[in-house]
Length: 316
Picture 1 (tube, rainbow, N blue to C red):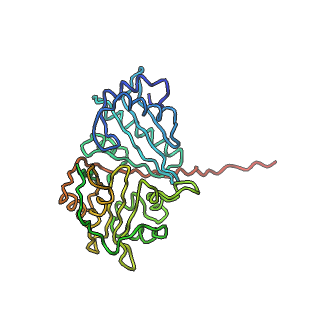
Picture 2: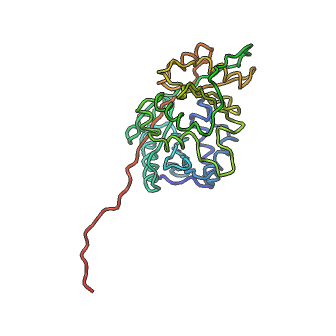
Picture 3: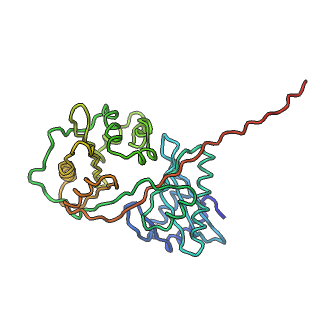
């Protein structure tokens, strides 16, 4: 039976987490500790976080599969953030039933697209493809054990902090740097891209995400366009780099500047995608090591249109 996760499922949930391994938020495959399992359970079962949905496959008080999703604010999109299946001979059927249940619920809610991120070795990749998910990209996570001290970090004379008025120019950079297959899945229009980038997510009166103390954004401006974009997340100690491959970008300079902003002595990580060979090679040259690679999948949902019927008119 597939149903929503309930507060009364706490013991079954903790037992399930002890048996199943899955990708956690840091990209590593680990068993969920009991304390983390309890914290996760309250968030899923009590719907403390707005826009979150959770379903389980449960029989006789034993959970064999779990799927949780988060509604992206402002858009008709769900992001599956957990898909955990208990290893068994029936695991494939359990996975597909959970995903089909989620997709049906998404269609009822008017959701237009569902995203899923899985490790490339996850058997759920095949099961997800059977219910209509397609892989549009591969993502690699690179890790640096300790950020070195740069005596004189290279600073591009065209590098400056991002401004609120840069969204149009950054969208043009996005279109130049990101292949069509990825843009088709994640955002083809300026409006779709603005939501993906985090615009308009906060209420009025709050700063935009790229202005918070957690994240700082920098751009490389070579008139009349932007050819590079660096995101520095201080809390996660994570860098993200986007560069126009047609303009011979200085990826090394962006990386070194980002590492200098994070500060030496601690770790750092950076996510790169399969269409960014210049970023990947630069990370490896600076002793980043790959700690994970993930398949990014999407599933578009057809809008439900009421069936049109002809009915006779009765004379009154």
